[in-house]
Image (cartoon, rainbow, N blue to C red; front, side, top):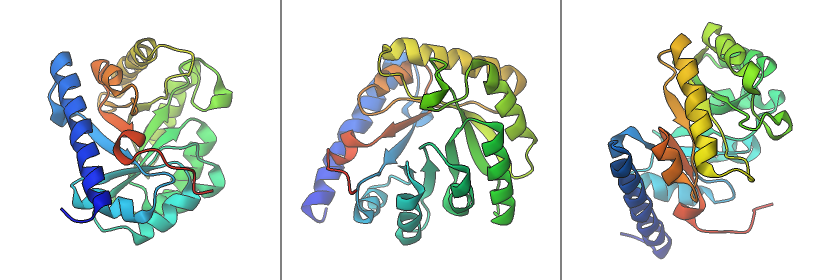
Length: 233
């Protein structure tokens, strides 16, 4: 199967896929309903290529300054997911390579991404998820409860963006089931107005089972796939 690192990632990938399959079975869902997004922040571009060779084509990054060169160097055919907090001055760069932005939480960011996506002359709209602040603490990222539909309406009205659903990170002091249950409720309310916005990006290495039980369609997994590494800086 190649070098030792590829074999290590392959073993980890098999274990993660088994966890996803078991969680889906417990929830009465099919594993095909859940997309595995490999979070490659702090890992080298070579690991992205290894994941691609193993069939993982959805790749998540938190920082544009790390994601942009990886996207430029990476193998073709990958779907890049920007999952970190996005500064408006990075919107133009992100719109040039990302397939999905998971972390849209303000009207100003919607405007910046719309402008960036138009300038990028993309072949397809930029898919967008509204990041939800589950504890209504806007300082940690995410639209607070009253603003979620407002942001969603702005995305839906954009000529260059496509509203796909919602994303959230479970607050550190919350039980995952409580967090993802609340996100499922937000998603259900949003789908009344926007039936096609049926993606739920939730769950990471330590809590993906809970997220899947509450309807997650995209799990963002880093350490369980790639191991623990010191930050690149």
